Image 1 (cartoon, rainbow, N blue to C red):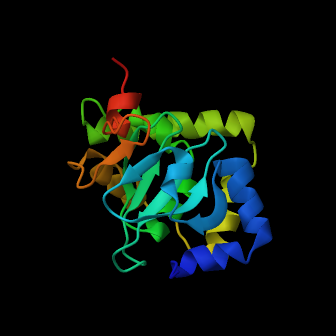
Image 2: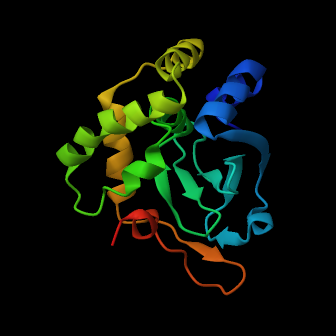
Amino acid sequence: MILPKLYLEINKKEDIKEVLEEYCDFILCEPSSNTEEYLFYAKEKLTILATDASGGVYAMISDIDVEKSPIVYVSSEGQSGKIANSFSELISLIIYYPFWKDILCYLGDRDINKIKEIIPSLEKDMLKYIPNYIQIQKEVGNSLGIIKSEKIIESFIEVVLEKPDFIVYSIQDDEPSETLIGSYVEK
């Protein structure tokens, strides 16, 4: 199985894996194409690369260049959507915006400037619970050669708002999953 270079690099760094798990709720796992274990399937071949504490999974579309393969997130409740254009983009998002799921709540009106305005508030909340959050970001980013950029969040918003080009289905009822936006936007 061919995997992204950054995945392989992180997998060799136990300290980075631990930080990503503890502070970013991102748990690198043994790559697997067995999506049925997680009660979903897609017509595209997916490779699961990581999970989160709630049972959600991060997967890449396997049939294309692994360095440019889009990343899909499937929640434990079955909602799904593309969240990054590549594994590198995903890791940038995870490191610098570990509260990315909270940002989904603000995507209903699609006002990117409004979303950018709430980010400092979300970062402030992170600092309440993890006072050394900024230092952790810098250390992990430096270790992996990833720099914080506004383009990270812009790309995230763009890909989440795109019309889905793939569909994830429940193996329990063969129904298509709800989109991430549909599940997180406050109604």
